Amino acid sequence: MERTIIHYGMLDKLFRFFPRTVTIQQFIPGTQDTYGEKTVGTWTAITALTDLPCQISPASGGEQKRPDITPVLYDYRIVIAGYYDSIQENYRAVMDDDTAFDIVRIEHDSQQITTPLLVKLVIR
Image 1: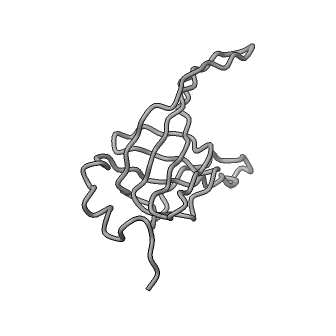
Image 2 (image 1 turned 45 degrees about the vertical axis):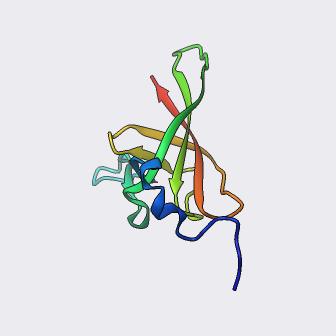
């Protein structure tokens, strides 16, 4: 029997530490309409990655200046209860209050128990 540092039933007992839910979405690029114009793509929820229990906390804040516009960038850390190795950096995370975050980095823990995400909220 394989032994780990983390008890296999730990997440079931820690449900209150993951009070929010998150859905991971993938961008589906647009196609061409009947006039040959490119259509806008859409963000679509990935079936196996919907309503995942999580927690969110601020990581840091900052501002990025551009000549045309100055968006404010906020960094957050979302920790998902469970190991999800199919999440990619070109996906986005949408919280249960419909706030969308761009995924910047995925940091799997060494025990494969949780999936921490470093995400960015851009306010334009």
